[in-house]
Each structure stands twice: as structure tokens, then as C-alpha cells.
Image 1: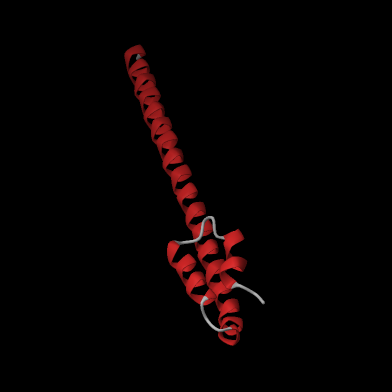
Image 2: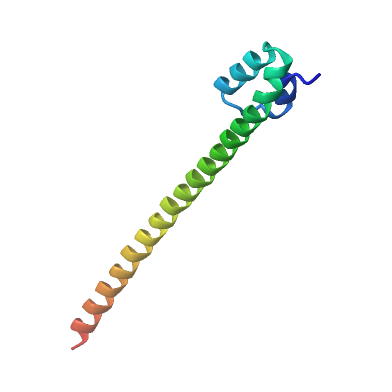
Length: 94
């Protein structure tokens, strides 16, 4: 006999509370209904985990983009300062 709450438990450390509640409710169903619903619950859990991974990747990418933008802004400002210094030097020597 397969218990969905038990089957879902090992992979649910990062599962949303709603999915854990769903697994608990499924475990209370009669066996014939559990067998039909359990695969669907696993798909829901897999989708939630995939969405969470994607969100984490997007957040990491945005963080890296912000850092890259700060470096580029710093580099642009430094380049402008160098240009202005060379321009003043050139105008002063002529």
C-alpha cells in the first residue's frame, strides 16, 4: 500500500506548505482514489520544485546583472575622467 504523504515526504524539504497539506489530504483518501491522485500530486510537486529552481536562477542572474552594471558604470566613469584629463593635457600643451 502506497502512502502519498509518506512518498512525498522525502523530497518535500523545499515544498510549499500547500503541497504538503495536499499530500496529507491525499493520504486520508481510500486506496483507489489515492492511486489515481498520487501521480498528479507528484507532478505538482515536481513543477513546484522546477519553478523554485528557475526563480532562484533568475534571481542569481539578476544579481549578477546588477553587479556587472555597477562595474560597467564605474569603468565608464573612469574612462570619462581619463578622457577629460587627456583632453585638458592636450589643450594645455598647444
